[in-house]
Image 1 (tube, one colour):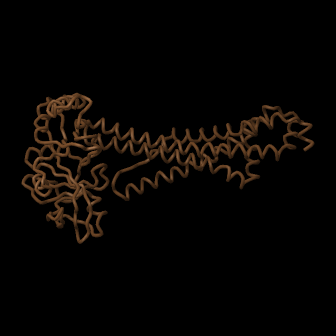
Image 2: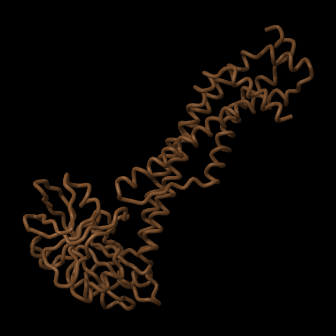
Image 3: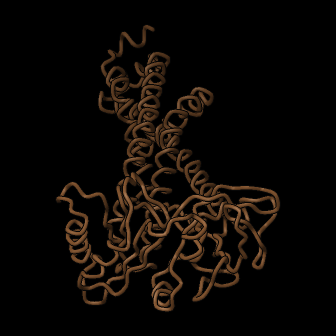
Length: 403
């Protein structure tokens, strides 16, 4: 019986093609936004998770001021670290290595073009180089990484080497950093998340060209096996509070484990996703109102048809179900088209991310997302058709046949 109702509803929809297409637009836009946003955000979360799994869970980053938000960058930074802080961190049990970093913006000039670039200076003593090779996330595709004894040499991120200047930068090329000449010895692998545009030079060279003999921007800490990074991070915070003479809750530094960094990214993504899906929900409401308006019009146009159906024995439930199935199908067709467009947008974002080379993004179109979107659009359609269906069901056969 339901199949018969569906066939009848499809026939009625096909008889007013233009109106049906216009009715679908609101649902189409809303479902498109929902599918695209959820698939892209889940893909980004997976990419972040995979990146940190590759780095390992035994990493801790320490930034002055506010919170750490990726290699070579700090946010809300109002203070600095010095060698005194490094000694304090080293006193904590469970630490295998502490790697200080000096990070500063500089003007990089190549073939007459200039770009503002964040430069990271890292230690190149033999012990630190050994540790960095174990914890480093910057993978060199061409040339080599910084090594012991290096001076005035530079490793470039893939984006800086190939996307920043008109001419591509190759290993062996010369460029200037704040007027000092450097030789390019390595270029990073394409598509590295968070570290794609990192530019690195030896720490001693960075101190010289930036005239910063004592400043330390961040610390990268490697935790020994058998110790819990979260517990070590808490001990580091206690030691730094004591060393910097600050009370708990008034810290002028921030200690993050890899797990906390992932949580920070996920919280930001979730907040953005909630806002955008809220906006998409407005479109779904508009689409539902459009379906309701179309169904009310359909009830008026088909008054005589309703009268005939009721005169030959159709019950109120039958009439109501017929109109609700019809409105549900309108929502379902909008949902199907929305899913198709959502997948297209998601795949376009994947292609764009790959073309930019900054992040490996693979949107996730899970069966739950697709089925959920279809059911949701169908239910919105049925709910929008509820009042028009009740109006149609309450018509008296005699009065309906007169019109």
